[in-house]
Image (cartoon, rainbow, N blue to C red; front, top):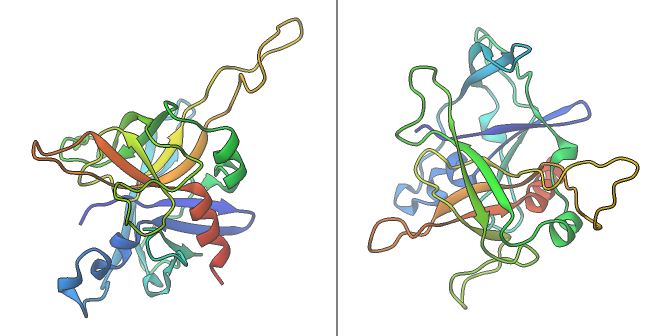
Length: 236
């Protein structure tokens, strides 16, 4: 199964982040009750040249994949592995993690992110770049109020979902979702409204889409970065 994981660096600690349904098959497929994760292997580029061209491809087998921690709310499809350990004999290191400071807190989500903000997310759908073995980026716009947990049905359990208009498909589970930069930095002599500039932020983890009779509704969902932060903080 080809899905995404990403790494977050907080001070000297590294965290592997993905969806719970990636780390725990029975989370989304109860018919496989009793099945366990046998092997977890991370593949990707660990170095880039000065002009951001990937240079070193590596494959890392994770030894402590049984130590995943899940968000305390089981309706939040988030899994976290603290300080992933590599099996002896596999090469590579993680040299391109996402800085923890890039994750939007609940306060930032409530005050700096809004509907119609543009988001971007990498993924490995069927048409990813197989020649260079790299993901493609897609874009979309936030469709639901990011201050609350989106629910398509009134009786749905509480979760930290946000809906966005965009095409998530197989191969995009676990993708980091970024709110792209809004505005630009200004200097002396330039007058702009408050909150004119907002830097790029990691605001969530992609988790799936809503199907329709036509196949894809055009509405997908991700779980808030504040819930990722809560999962990281719960790791012992």
